[in-house]
Length: 123
Image (cartoon, rainbow, N blue to C red):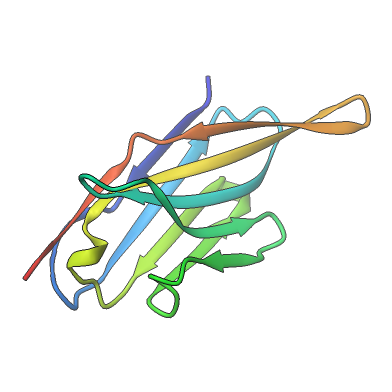
């Protein structure tokens, strides 16, 4: 059974920082990509950061320059360092994992979500 567990959320004052962690267990194949999404009340879930197995990263415009995604492939873990947090960053942050499984010379990708970790920013 694949499990994806996030940690590191909490309450910070505006301008503060947090570091989120996400670890996947029970992965069958090889993690090809990991992402961080967030969802605030009344808003759509949005992808804020992405990293693939090769270490290539992408960020949404709203967090670019403030957030940094990194990974430890050996530990099936991804991190999100969040700096200069503001009220717009308050949300539940979810980890998303793509598990690539080799099948007859190609790969089948299974995706999994964590339960989320709450980030609250006080003014």
